[in-house]
Amino acid sequence: MSLASPRSLFFLAFLACVAIMGGALYLEHALGLEPCPLCIVQRVFIIAFGVVCMIASLHGPERVGRRVYAAFALLFSVGGTAAAGRQIWLQSVPADQLPACLPSFDYMIEAWPFLEIVKTMLHGTADCAEVTWTLFGMSIPEWSLLAFAGCILFSLYQLLRRA
Image 1 (cartoon, rainbow, N blue to C red):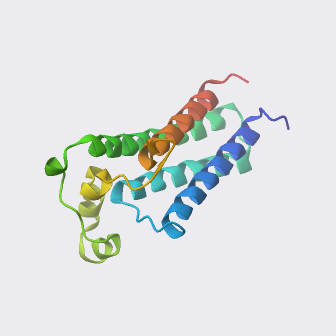
Image 2: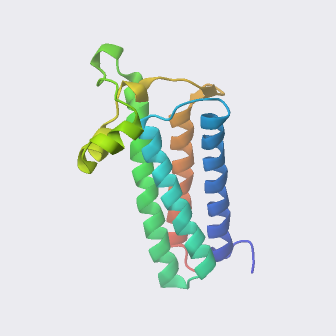
């Protein structure tokens, strides 16, 4: 199995997702940063992308299967990009125009209907606009957007490659 085989590339993409989630969990549990609703949505998309890549690497599909897996990976990548882009946009909106803060995620799960939780999480709140941590001048959603751009490029490569 060469390094450029679809199976090994899907496995490397899965490992990248594990590293990204490891970083997110480090920021949450070691540094005490509480994830906002859009951060949770982005985590769901990166986990879904990683699961698709893990299944594809275990399956080792041929051309059609590789394209199906790549299409699902692309779908999750685009969803994550949209969530990260929305959060970056919220960070640029003046504070007086932001939606109100929400109760905790645990409370929403217990008290709110499921569709209301999904709508609220995808819309974002003032919590999502707060920049609590940066690395090299980039906030968490900007790093997330960069990761999802890499996921999109990977998915397109797997989708469009010939051999």
